[in-house]
Image (cartoon, rainbow, N blue to C red):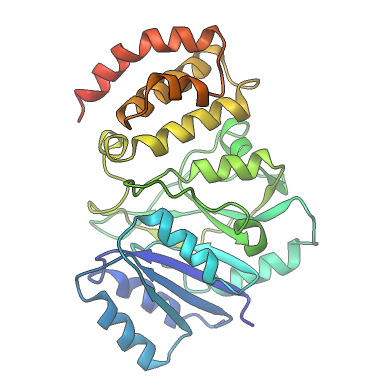
Length: 303
């Protein structure tokens, strides 16, 4: 059995996927499987990957499915994963030269079988599309062995993109919800569940993924993401209240509750359903309900 699954969800990214493929081919340590879930591509991605499989340079597992969004592709990847470790590397990303060796060496040297460790976290190297030079990122906290994803931002002030290598057994416990008619839910929804369950991630200071965001990716405007996946966002904001209402400020609590109501309404739910499913039925809900029309109006102007 290989040690690590490099999982890549892709949709019509045949024009750039070769960067990741080439970075995998040059890895000195080949103790990995590249697991690709093609989310209904129509641009020749299947033929491209079948050619790479025929080359037999690296171990590739390829699955094609009807277009359903990254969350469904991710769940499929988890289902098909058979290795102890699992990391998602997007189709517009590529690896550093010794990424596989660096990941596995760090893991074997630092993981001692603790039940509360879910994996390891590192920065992602953001790359400028104009010159391919790394953009400076905020360093992960020094002097600590592990922390939760929430503490990484809230307690240590980390800002920026991260790469997470999961223990597959842990990741499989937290699949994305699959919402009919929607193709997106923020990864923070899963991270919050993992944090709330008491898991932490080992801190790895050496980035192993280069990331270049593209116009056709999920980092489009937040307004568009809100518009296209309102119920997913409603679930996220409602979960925020359920998990963290004792830790967040009154303002943040009210904001999450207000956006839970707005997103639920945009998703077609009745007010009765919104109230019954709310994680907070206190006076905060009444205040948020009064604020919701105003903030909905501001949001709709962005659509």
